[in-house]
Image 1 (cartoon, rainbow, N blue to C red):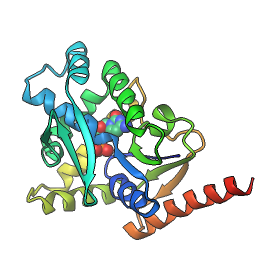
Image 2: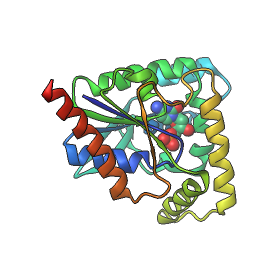
Image 3: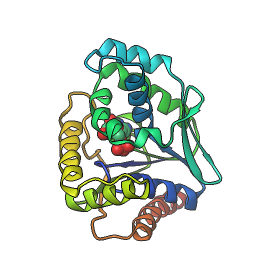
Length: 225
Ligand code: DC
């Protein structure tokens, strides 16, 4: 089965998806990491970010792998571990542009469907419930107010030794949300059948418990019928 978790930047998707997958014994797939790895590849190769054809070609050419080792997720780009390199402010700034290209999305979505196969997965992103798996059994739309999200992102960056002013992070998050929500192809929006989960006032444990409870309710319902 597929548990689809969508939502804006820093709404808590990754942490929630990872922990929910752990509790349920499902595979966690962070689709944002794939767009990030592709963006990193484009920046490293000096691909013109305005050139849709070049970006589409690159998406078909590079090898992006996602996996977990001892519960810690990693991302590889052509065999190199880029788990840290895809989380820099530079990648943050350009990833929305790369991920709005129709050809890029077509290729990455194809890979995501292959990755999920027929396994039980918790897949997080922007278009999982709308495009990648519109028939996902459980769909969650995570939301949180922008200030809370900026604070979370700041703390996350600080943990990695990157200090940045809150206002700057806040305006980048708002900009990225606007971009991701207004793009022509697969914009971020609540999927049909998705239930909101506002994480602004929730602890990570509460977020995880709530999603796990929704999955269990679904499974109970299915087993009864
Ligand atoms: O979740 P994240 O911040 O790591 O995602 C990075 C970017 O990738 C995000 O700004 C939009 C894009 N993205 C997307 O377009 N579709 C997805 N399924 C996941 C991410």
